[in-house]
Length: 476
Image 1 (tube, rainbow, N blue to C red):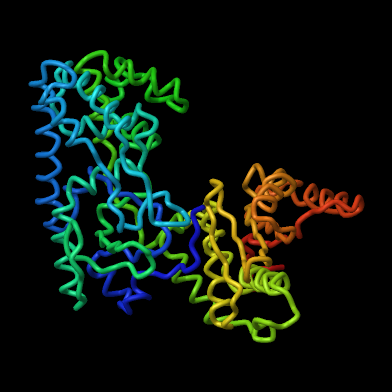
Image 2 (cartoon, rainbow, N blue to C red):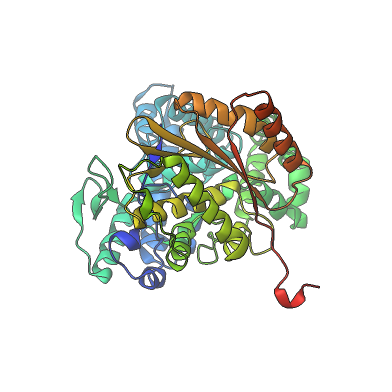
């Protein structure tokens, strides 16, 4: 299971001024949980840091130009040139960036031998139709379903690790911090990892929430806004407009590999996307700021849980209930509801609300010196929380937004599965209304009442109003 108990940030752990990190363009990562941002190779040349716009760009191009030369000279699969290419396409995950889909941890998977071999075979096909652009490897992520944002990020990090090491050396010097020697350079050490894991600092201007080559909507929109490119796409790789399923990706692959012109059209479509990094300062998707903002709320609005210290008769269930009650109060009356929405007024992803709850729960438990601790758990594929004290006492909490189509089903199915796996009968199902509620609230209440009437086990249902209200001066 992927578990994390301490949502502490780089700035908090090392007492670094967050403004200083911002001035240096360094992402303030969370040290025990991956941030869902990714290194995008197409942003390297746009970086304001010479380590990346010069050194990393050169390292990246040289790496893939060498592979292309080797594959061009290969006579058959498995010869010396092929094996040399294969070694250059082995990209193990470099732990320490704290980026990706790790969820409850900072560890990913990297490239396996089977994936590397498949990439090599497809790359060889592309080269045979006359393509020698190093970015052909990025384009492959369009039609290879398991080359996602995390793979692209891992690949790029491996290739430009020397430039990353140079960047870290400069930043640590400017911050007045001492690093330690690791395999790939001198870095801060992550004190929350059992293994000797570095903290690899990265500039915000090479990071995106979705790499350009994985941004279907962006690629299609860019092609559509360019008359010449739109015409080429329609003539050669028309399926780019409709790709959604694995089968449709296969169709796109067939079209892209049909000719040199077709594949170049695909490359040009990718490169036509405006290469903007993720706006981590405004944080529209709530990927970065939740830890700091959650802590701010708990400091401004503390609660007293000292009467529930370890060893007393009141169990952890009531502690968790009190924390959920305060979480509701923060959202409904103290302004935290604004953190549930993007700048355009649309709701953020459900994970944003889940992360805020995690931070609030952690801070309140810590402030009151309680030995019941929240854990964020993504081991089953969905984020849920477990509060535990000793072996026997476990309380689960599941957070859902009203926008989730599975909100009702999750109450009777998903959470009950979690309860069984964790060997507990105590759980809370928290639903936050951010719009599109429809009659889900009524169905949830009816379900709870039916289960109780039939004396069947059912989790506690908690409803929170997270909608944005008009200001008092505008209310009638």
